[in-house]
Image (cartoon, rainbow, N blue to C red):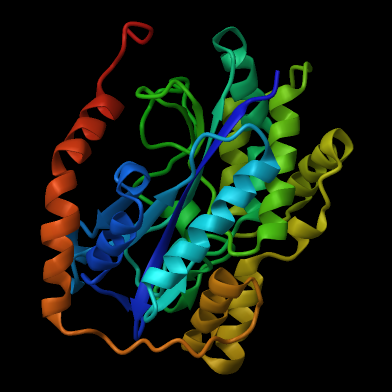
Length: 335
């Protein structure tokens, strides 16, 4: 049986390299375009801990409706990106897990939900976990720890909202979970992906693993060992072996792990500076073309964020609280 699919895409809107509270106003304007949809299909994230001293705003989020195929999901995402680009005419839209600030609380991710039959959920969860290191590496877009190169993904390595897999699939902050609120399998580890061709390849492989009737030899300790490899070193010999197994199982092209967006960002930053790399991400999101954009990114005045607080965040606060309670409350099947 084909799983249902949903996608949550987080991204930064950067003004001269930093998020700005005007992000709430961007979301308010999106909400006005289609209140019934965007009330539950957008979200704002705030900095926390020490990082909040440098600015409260963090990533913005949009999500697709429930879809029944990869083409439907990608079409929904294209529509979302088009509408987001219209309501965010200034500021660089950066689909990267972390911008150049060493702050593990200030991250953005790409979350994929799969709705599967409950009787097969545990086996499918473990099958996805078996191949997740390869698919996660293919999404890598967070190579910097501060301004220094870390490897393939500092976000996947260190984000507060992620972690190695445990024996409890309902544990909230790990790479792959079963959600308490929806009952879906949620892939949380992926970095944001600007390139829809790359994303399509990842999604198609993920679905093929989910519908497979095989049982792959998932081991928690082995997953966490590979996790320490792909986040920093990328395609190690052990990772290459797993990638070839995924290719044999689904046809997944190894090129997506041999060269990542993190590699592109490192190269552009070394040659032309980080701002130039950000402009490539902005163009990739807005147009689908990997080239520097000419989007203005002068920070707006503080008064522009008031609209967002009044017309976006405050009206949605009860819903935000409800989601938080449901996502952290244990259900009967866990007790």
